[in-house]
Amino acid sequence: MGLSEENLIGLILALVSSGFIGASFIIKKQGLKRAAAVSGVRAGVGGYYYLLEPLWWVGMIIMIVGEVANFVAYAFAPAVLVTPLGALSIIMSATLAQLILKEKLHQFGILGCVMCIIGSVIVVIHAPKEQPIKSVLEIWDMATQPAFLAYVGSIIVLVFILVFHFVPRCGHTNVLVYTGICSLMGSLTVMSVKALGTSLKLTFEGENQLIYSETWFFMLVVAVCVIMQMNYLNKALDTFNTAVVSPIYYAMFTTLTILASVIMFKDWDGQSEGTIVSEICGFIVVLSGTILLHATKEFERSCSFRVAGSAPSSPSLSVRLYNGNEDCFLKHDEENGSPSESMCSRRQESY
Image (tube, rainbow, N blue to C red):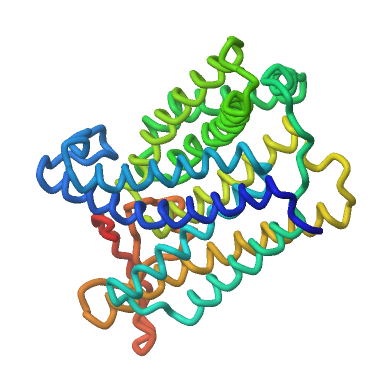
């Protein structure tokens, strides 16, 4: 299935966006670490000193450029096409780390990159063609349909439960809490961004959409969702290992965004079952490659610890999902057949 002209423009913008965002991710992480070292208060526990750190702002500016390109991409192409391509930013980060930082990429990491590329190609090939939208009022009708209102209501309830119940109890020990909030709000962000982007696109084409209150409402929703999303993403990055946060956030955010887009914009209407299955398979391949790439990073880090003899091997991903920064290691003496001896140590994640 060939790409329409608008889908092609959206594809190019999404690729540019992935490049900038991939570079900004590491820069912002370093800025957070510097700010924590100077102030002694991490963003994960309520510190905001990183706002005075120049390196963090460099990363933020680069990310903003990438997000602007991503914003415009949603005005041209469906979320089912644009959102999964975000995985390419991870490939960009891995590539830059190998070329600039001389960090060797494991063979399984290379396989993960290849899987992301193959999955992205599958998604692009089978991307749906959107019906032309002539007014923001059409988008408003989509946003106020019962099915999407039920989705929005569910998101708001879940976010309130996570923020007021789970964050105080296990926000710093369970990575799913912060990333869950980011992902849930992120799906609403993307829908609002697409609505606002389409409105601005129509305005620049001569059909002024700024006269409608719906346009300004979508703009307000974008601002609120982005602020909340960035706040909790900073907390997640500062509290947990990036190699754990990235794949979980990507998986949850992309899945929820595709679901929201299918409900609101009816992306799959008119597509054959085979095409829809191909898109889902492409997304699963991208997701698997993302998880494999980050699991390889964690494996290489644990190997370097063992070689240096400075720390025991890292726990599994499933253990990290539950324990966060509290890593528990089991020490076995197989030669003497002695019982297992548990040793728990709390350490600061470094990336």
